[in-house]
Length: 281
Image 1 (cartoon, helix red, strand yellow):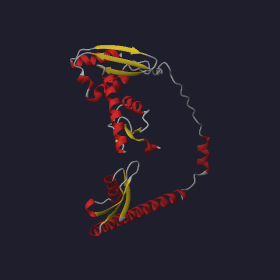
Image 2 (cartoon, one colour):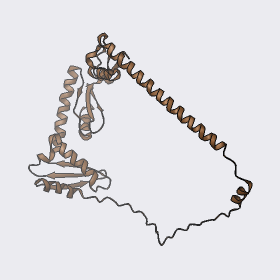
Image 3 (cartoon, rainbow, N blue to C red):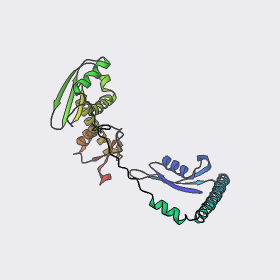
Image 4 (cartoon, rainbow, N blue to C red):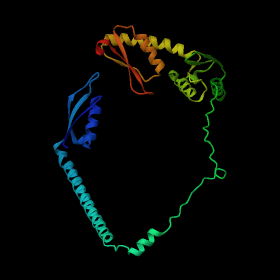
């Protein structure tokens, strides 16, 4: 293959895809940009092996063909020898003398011994398999254990409704337990949903009123981003965030006629995009 057209989310990725397809180095190719791409549009390039490097890649291709031919020849010889051996075996089996009538009759008259096998339940009793249920701990004990392990003090409060179990931790110097942008708190919340007893309800952990403060901050940020997108006409991509935080931004901008929001990607790297409403329409 001398040339290849490839696409990507940007020009660099499109070039890399073409190089992988050609199995060529960047210094050995000429690159022609067919489309720079853009919003919801992929970049497209034509990558061609340059004239001064073409001979090198043709030699590689010819070498591959030679090796493939030799492998095919070896396979042919091996298959031929196998078929010949099978034919000789089949011929010997066909020329084997049939047993004499007396011998055949003796074989037929031999009594057949019937054997009955009875399972002894007393010797090999079958015990019913019991699945061990995983022991779950309470949400309060889990959080208190984390606080004790980190040498922190705090009061753990629990509130429960039909859908959620809300665990609120109140105390001083809990910033390390919250983490940057709540990353540690969200990780603990996820872990609690795995190991804690919740009666099949989702557990939501809130430390030091962080969720309320974060909601106010994200709402203000969403409005600033909406103004920026509306003025520039270009979309804005947020960093990956938790589903609850994406919902705050969606809610904050749902009544804004200038912009619209869209979530993309896979968890836990799912992110949110804000772009002018006419793009989606």
